[in-house]
Amino acid sequence: MANAPAAAVWTKTCQVLKHELGEATFGSWLGQASLREAGEDVCLVAATGVARDWIRRHAWRRIGELWAQYDPLDRRLDLKSRMEVESMGAVAPPLMAAPMAANAVGAAVATAPAVFEVEAEVAPVAARQGRLFGLQERFTFETFVAGPANEFAFAVARRVASWADGHFNPVLFHGPYGFGKTHLLNALAWEAMRTEPQKRVVYLSAERFTSTFVKALQDRQTAAFKEELRNADLLLIDDVHFVAGKPTTQEELFHTLTELVGEGRRVVMTADRSPTEISEMEPRLRSHLQAGLVCGIEPADRNLRMGILERKLETLARQGGFRAVARPEVLQFLADRFTDSVRELEGALNTLVARVGSQVATLTLDEAQSILRPHLSCNERRVTVDMIQKIVAEHYSLKQADLISERRARAVARPRQVAMWLAKQVTTRSLPDIGRRFGGRDHTTVLHAVRRIESLKGDDASIARDIEVLMRKLRG
Image 1 (tube, rainbow, N blue to C red):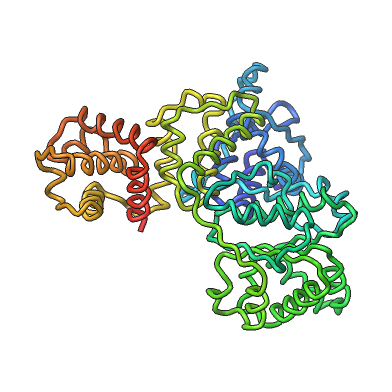
Image 2: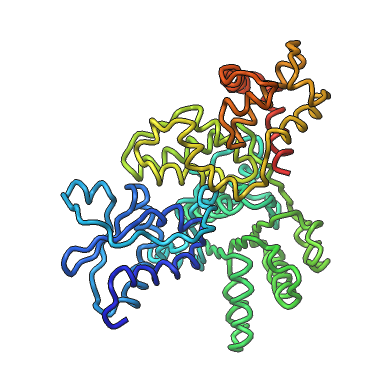
């Protein structure tokens, strides 16, 4: 690459970034970026100001390292948003857009993780209060949205973080991927350090615990490793299920846990399921985890999902310098579509804002669906109108033929409207096409049904519950 053009350097950089960030996150934030060249300088142009800010916070240092590694000409690389470039009158065509893999379609539902978090931001705290591997500043109690699904876990975390007496020890928060466990653990760490600055906090993932322990064994530094952890006043371990099936690591974790708890030091962990369900975990470690407080986190209900979206939009708006406004039907679509994971829910909003920036306020439901549909179709099983009709009919104890019949009784008409609403939400069919599949009805009938259910599900708890259940059934 002695005379490597900027485009070739960028291609190699992107190949590494896609591997490190994951194609979904890469697609959300760097997939629309392009290069522009001005003399000896090269500028990476992000699609929006929000995308630029995300790149600068989470990936810019790594991009700089890769660019320096692959560019023999040592050209300076700058970062701007497309609007900034246009306002400066830079009309030179882009050298190259960020190469997107053909299957890089998960972007809509991938929350952008802080993969390249700047370590200097937490270094002063780490030096004073312990070791913080991967602690993220954006995850605090202030940014955590509490609701019925997680309010008990939230209250427990706040109590532990306050160093209050009479606590359970250890504490284990469990729930599937994307339920907010890592956010809660990070928030607990930040609050605990703020409340008692003299206390020593150690935060790390179970994977980091394992890799560090293995290296200590290889380097014959196990005594130093043990001292590092067992001197903690508060030990926080994320994703403890990772140690399942690793006997040596489990034994070390067991001894660490028993010593800390025995000395009255606090231990908090997270897992993707309760200890009783982690089959490859050694019985004595499982027993110790169960001896404290095992606290499950449930899926977020619709109101909580709406609250999460509103809070996330406020954060993105502050970062991008625009008003935190979006059409209610767009937020409702996201809340109804992404029911299984908070990360997926926030990731969908990230994708919309990354694509349209401040124009999110005027984004219509159809436009939002158009942006997200290519990603959704590859991350969910293919849902057809026929499938929707069968599941809705079964749910309401009807026959599928009832939904396409001329019957207008309320017991049939309302389920038919629900089925039409679902068809509009989760399929790519147009309104006329949906109408044809419901007994040849006009598209205006479908539109009325969609609007009617949109109105009802905000006021009628039974309709909202039905939709929640039906969405889960459709996703298998």
